Image 1 (cartoon, rainbow, N blue to C red):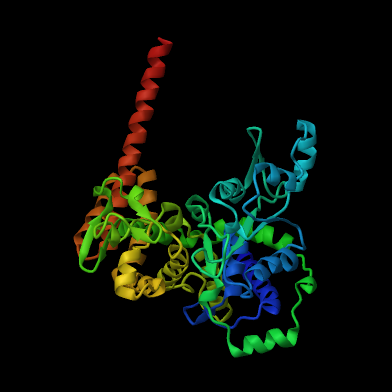
Image 2: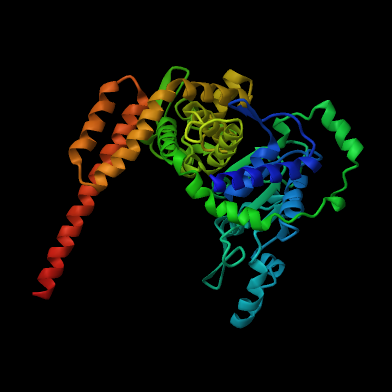
Length: 454
C-alpha cells in the first residue's frame, strides 16, 4: 500500500511540475472518470522509463516539455544532443567527450554518461544513418570499441531518452527526414502535441506567465523517480496477465486485418515489406489493406500500467478497494489509447491508399475506426476471466497439473464466439507444449551426460 501511495504522489508531483510551465488543458483521453492530460502521460513515461518522441510544429511546446523534465524533474542532470544532418559518429563521440581517449581515460570520462536523462533535440534533422547511432542510447548504453558502457548513474538503473522532431511530411519544413523505423520501435510513447488543440485559457495563461525557457524552475525529484521506477514492476504485477493477453491478441489481429470486408493474411504475401514505400503501396489493392505493426510496439505495456496505477491510486483515495479500483474496461481502454498514439507513426502498418480513398487522408479517423473495432471484439468480462485463468495456468504448469491446464483450454475453446478466449486457449496450449519440450530436453541432456561419464 505504501509503495503505491508513494508512486501516486510522485506521479502527481511530476505532472504538476510540468503543468506549471506547460499550459495545456485539452484532455488526451478519458480513463474511467479521469481526464488524462499531456502532463499525465509524460509523468507516466518518466516513471516507467518509456522512451518518448515528442512531435509538433514550431511553438507547440515539444522542446519545452523535454526541457521541463530536464530542469524541473532531473535538476538539469541530462545529456543534451542537437540533431542535424552533419552529425556523425565522430561528432557524437566528441559531444560525449570520448573521442580519442585511452581505455583509462574512457573509464574516467564515462562518468559523464551517468546521467538519468538523454535529450535528442530535432531528431529527424538527422539522416537515417545518423539516427542509427541513437539506437544504443534508446536501449540504455553506448558502445565504444566493442565495449558497452551502460547509461545512468551506477546503482539506480534508470535511463530515459526523450527526443523531439517536426512532422516529417509537413511541407513547412525543409531538411526533415523520415525517422528510422528501428528507432521508432524503441519509442514507447510517440506524442504529437499538434493533435491536441490549445484552449483559449491556455493562450491567456501562457501570456500571463510570460514563460521564458531560461526561467524554467529547477527541481530535483531524481531520488523519488528512481525509487518509484524500481518499484513499478512489482506494483503493476496485477495488470501483467491482462497486458500479456491484450498485446498477444492485438498483434495477431493486425497480422490478419479486415478492412472494407476483405481479410488479408499478410504472412501469405511474399516479400510484402519490400514493396511498401512510405505514402504509397506499389503492390496495389492487396497490400494497401494494411500491414502488421511491430511486436515491440504492442508489447510495450509499461506506459499503460503506469497510467493505470495512477488511476487506481485516485480511486483508492476516494474509498475504492485496491483490488477492484481498476476495471477490466479501464485496462482495455488505456492499452488501446496508448497503442494508437504509436501506431499512427508506424509506417509499416498504415494503409495509406485506403485512408486516402475512404477517410480523405485523415489518419486519425482511420485509427478511431480501428480502435472502435478492437473495443467491440474484446469483451471485458472474458478478458478478466482469461487473465485469471492465465495466473492459474502458470501455477498448474509449474505444479505439473496437466489435466487442469487442458481443462482450462477446453473451457476457453467451448466459448467459441469469443475471439480473445480462443487466442488465450492457444497461448495456454503453447505454454504447456513449451513445458513438455523443456522437460524432454532436460531428460535427454541428463542421459547424455551420464553416457559421457560412462
